[in-house]
Image (cartoon, rainbow, N blue to C red; front, side):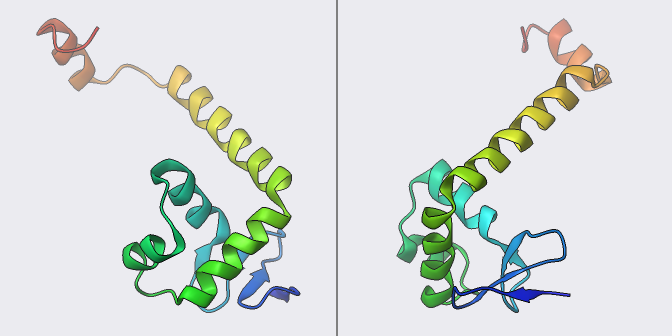
Length: 104
């Protein structure tokens, strides 16, 4: 069940995650692209042609109004990935690359 928000194009899933309605794209996905690459709304549209500029601007407006919450979610995700990375076993490829001096 998706809940409507006061933002055009933005719905919340049952966990409260903001999505672009009908696009199966999370707001956080666009935010990460903007942060990582410095993309404008127009560049985001070029990279995500299935989205309208209205959807993209709505997602960015939602982000700016909920920045602390979304930034905290991003930080949590990064910490989780780092935890997984630290606890992952060394793969045969990494062993081979280290033996060849291609990885430290």
